[in-house]
Image (cartoon, rainbow, N blue to C red; front, side, top):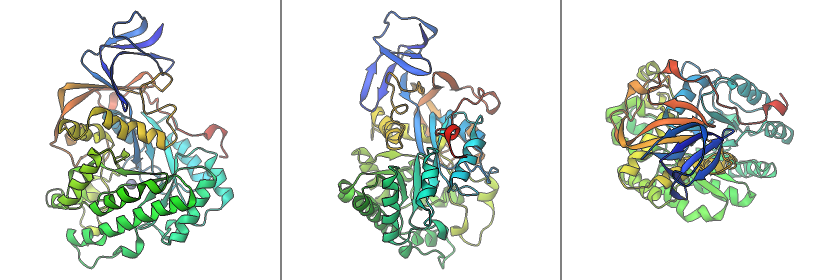
Length: 450
Ligand SMILES: [Zn+2]
């Protein structure tokens, strides 16, 4: 007797699609059965004509807790995730304080426990001065990555010199942990642009800095033997650099839906709401990025969900460069990627590969997440391609309370979401009616050095 049986759908994995009835037991996928196979379950549900996808894994999210909870917190951010079909998210370390030690990581894990609608893994910022013993203590708690910054961060975290980046990656290699590297080159940044307008901000973070950062990250990965994941990239020069160098080391690369959909021209309409790093680029850059996505050379699409309140975005600043950087995205990852499916740029297995399978495998969760296969967590999206989604500000659960994608209408509607076999979202959900938080903290807090 299974716990749950979903009948009549098509199962989508990165490897392809299959007509099958999906059986769940003990929170895991128990079997993919022949359609209408003889089987019994406590709950049997017909989802005829729908597609079943593994829950998405968003590898780049800022939940803003601790310290910045007026922008977002574990509850609001994971409600947004559940409503968008993201059943696992990986939280970045740039809150207040930054997550950069065993103590701050353990605090964050404790704070999150019991308040999550989806599963959450944590990423730690690597201080330049971090010692082996500190790294061992952090490693024991099970973070999903260490983030190494090469530009645009406080000095304690800045690995501006290539020698510093290589030393950091050598240490991470010893501990066999993934390094997330935000590509940049401090020597090429105009940290205080003279102009105050959008153009000055865009010019202050040139494609050359990104491309140089990508080259530096790949070369440092090759030299150290470390596994490196290159964070959000969006320039034609950066992508061209990636194409030529990616075989040199164990490296992967990420971009975001906003970089695939917007250019710097869109600042005229969206203004501060679209302000983030890297800046939006030209149509030439966007087309190059999209071509790379089509070809399957983008490993991961993540959102860089980085909300600020409407008031913070609307306030007056001395220059555009000073507008708080970042925008919400975790709730719209599926919908924005469905746009590219509708356009014919990618198919559903490619969506699953970039937004579930690859991020799960790359960040060490491949045994439980990222595929609908026996033994994996039963994190399931029920997607109805006969219906449409209209993205609106009103439907957003993030404290940001807006989305830059408002007004987009895409083919496909998320009918429901299961987290380890239990309903985590249905399309009638309001903020008040979510089920009790069943999301887990990914890591080893119980056995850790807290
Ligand atoms: Zn980010």
